[in-house]
Every structure is written in C-alpha cells, then in structure tokens.
Length: 310
Image (cartoon, rainbow, N blue to C red):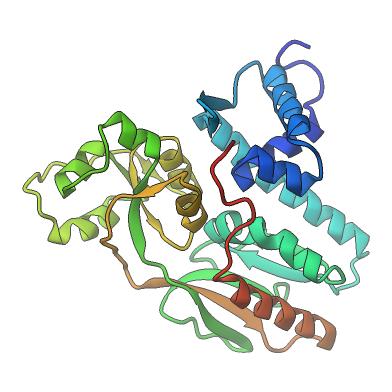
C-alpha cells in the first residue's frame, strides 16, 4: 500500500504508542501480551503506511526520531480520549465514574504510564482522565481529584490539598548528544555549548546559572517550547539540554533515554500537589480515597518497562 493511502493501521499505531510510552519493544510486547516479533511486524506496518522510518537504529538499540516523538504524543492523547469516551458510554452517565484531572506533564509522564496498574488493582473503579490546564480554575463539581503545579499549597473549600512531588528541575539531555560532543560536560560553559532548550522563556536557565563558574554571558539562546511535553521531546531527540522537573523525567533517567549533566538543581517554589474532594457522594468519595492512597504509594515505584529500548 502506498504511503498515505487507505485507513491508518489502528492496531499497529496502538503497538507503536506502547513502544514509545514504555521505552522498549520487549515491554510493549509484555503489556500487549504478544511476542516481540509481532511488535516488530506492527512497527513495520506503521512505517510502511507512513512511508518513513520511526526509529533510528544504533546497533542493538533503537531511538525514536523527532517526528515519531510527536506522533507518539498525539496518539497517547487520542487513545486516552477514546478510552475515556468509551468509559463514559459504558457507565451510561451513572455519575459513578471517578474523574481525574491532571496537568499535561503529570498526565503524560507520571499518570498514564501507571494507570494500567491502578485498573488491574481496582477493576471495579471506572476512571475518566482529563487535562487540568496550569493556571485555570478546576470545577470540582465535575472533577474528583486533580494533579496541579502550584507555588505553595493550594487552599480550596471542600478540597483536600496534599504535597505530591517536588518541583525542582535538573539539566538533562540525550546520551546521543553527549556522544556527538565528546562526552559529559565538565563545566557550565560546556553545558552552554551543548545548546539550551527553554520552557516558555529563559528564566529557568538564568536562575540555574546564577552561581555558574563561567564568564560566557551570551549563552541563553536556544529554542523555546510552550509545553513541557514538547520540551521533553526535544531533549529526547538530542536538540539540546533542558531543565526538567526530576519527578517528570525519572523514568527517562532510569532507562537511559536522558542523562543528568549536573547535580545542581533549581526551583522557583512550585511543587506538584494532589487535590481531592471532601464533599462527594459516598461511593465516589470512597473511590477518590482509594485512588489517592494508590497514587501516594506509587510515588516511589518504578515505571513498567523502564529500560533501554531494544
């Protein structure tokens, strides 16, 4: 079939999304209950349909190409919305679905990769995941729990607010970028020469560099991204060094997809908080408490498939 012709291969796209999300062909095969050979076959189907490769082969390892990272991000959002729509239909608007809002970084990097474990442990609890946009008010008439990024503990009526994860950021980049530049940076000037990536503006890097040991004052240029997930994708694809919240790139660091290039951290006083309702109907309130307890316990757990891609 020629590229771009016919209906996109949805089963193959689901397989590709699993590989991108879990970090390896092996982990995707285990999650989908198929063989690695079957996963490889489905990936070839996607590449044939698109008419271009999705992975860069480096010996026995594979790395997502930049356009593949963008596709994986879009697919994750789409599949989540499809699943949520199906769950809403399944419950026939019974009002017993547990609605969880999360800012995009938490949704993509922390919650969605772990959600299958919650469903396996609590198959009787129906969940609906939606975005909470940073800085916008959440309607707790419709939402039962929310993951937010806040400067200080939020104080809301009928809502319990708890510290969830620390918000400090560390400089990270892809191992391929380091290899292309001759190895890990030894000074701040070396980091500047790797190229900086910015989340919204250069303020994060300026804060991080306040105690720098370099005299190079012209080092704050570089690409700017308005969304953390875009910033992370750029770092993963080797475009430069990004300041990323360590809690959101923990699995990337564990798997080796990203490398921390300095122990120096920076924070602007923001941290991640979990908000949960205190005035819900009895059943949904109990379910919210179950999810809250699970999320708190999950904070120290490694992601499934957190290993180098095969």
